[in-house]
Length: 289
Image 1 (cartoon, rainbow, N blue to C red):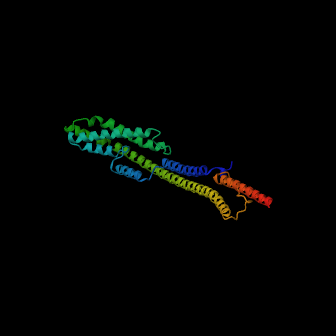
Image 2 (image 1 turned 90 degrees about the vertical axis):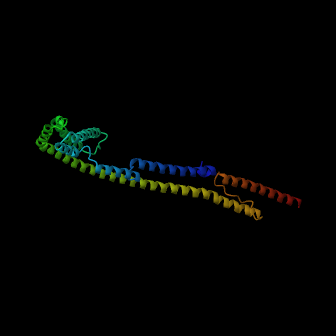
Image 3 (image 1 turned 30 degrees about the horizontal axis):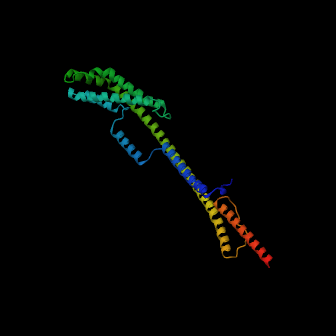
């Protein structure tokens, strides 16, 4: 059965269905694009800005910058009142480092594109620093700094161990610098991939919109022509009959089985009966004459 033989309702529902499918496809592609690349939105930029600001004003947990500074401050502390908050903050730094190290140690949290050794260099240098501090200063930190001998012992030990601490600190900073370069490269590459993905899906959506729009316009025009042209033929034929100049032997062409086609068929049936009736009347008139 040809499509043009279907009724107007079916044709119109087909046109509506095509529009709905086009809209659904457009929405699905938009959702896929958003799910793959959810960056650079106003909310994303706001969150990233706050994270960047926090990263600028707070020492990073994987860096030894703050623990190294705290040890220097401890070496010049003169009483427990000064030593207690420094000791407490050092313990917090150690806890934060362990938490972040365990977080990034998990395979699913560290990018597979990032060389594992680059991160391990940072973690290893930090571990060595904290282990050395634990062996050398753990007991000294717990002493009563109100006593001169406790302060003197800590200061002398710090001066003796300072070259080793600085060496470990420099190793940590060098590893962090290398890791920073690698992460910046990966971030830049990810941004390129994200931009390419957005551009590809945007072009795909544009092409999809053009195709759907073309199909809708073409189908709408074809349906309209299937209604308008046969209707014009019917109007012309009925006008001829109404004006009395109609040719009862002519028939309206039936090119479909839709409502217009059925109407044309039944009008042809009426014309055919009129033709037979007129012919019968003519024969009767001749017979009477």
